[in-house]
Length: 258
Image (cartoon, rainbow, N blue to C red):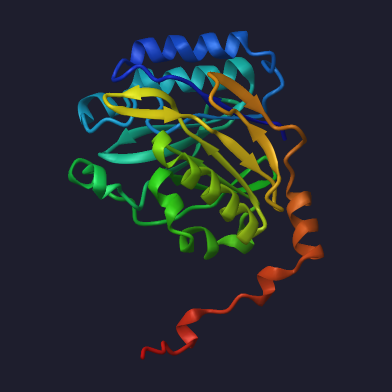
């Protein structure tokens, strides 16, 4: 599977302009027609806004992504709000919804918890032979969310609105989730400014050994995986380095405090 990460400068709360920009980027991309799975950033059409009337997906928004999936025959994962939940939604090549995940860890530092409802469960779904676990932005800082499901997962996908001033955290944590769980990890962030907050993109993909296989850097682009992404690669890594079998439940250990 060829995985594409689309990062772009989202125009604040302007869905119409952002839809036009997305189509333009896809049409101009040298990778058009080669992408099996295209991933967008958090709140893809609106930016990370607390204005729920704008971030909320309507039928025309859902139809937009469904049409893209069918037109280019590719799976798509995008972000948007439904029922006041910040979601990552995945469509198959026919434009049909096959999975949705609601962000569990809301960003209280940015008052996200005052405007949105938290999700209450992780989910794993199959995408053309790959077992995928989705996450959204702040979720990335909580390794147990990824650790607890590692044996059932081939690839993690994280969509985000992660500020440039903490870009090193973003890239480090994406790689850590890949290495510690011996799985692919794909992260898509946005570019541009939201008020005084700047975003540098740095959308990246790592293989099960932590090697960079996609790097969009800070360009408005679709970055494509250098090699096919496969469940077989995950299985071979875990067979060669059977570290997951050594994991223990920390509930079984006493805490020592002096």
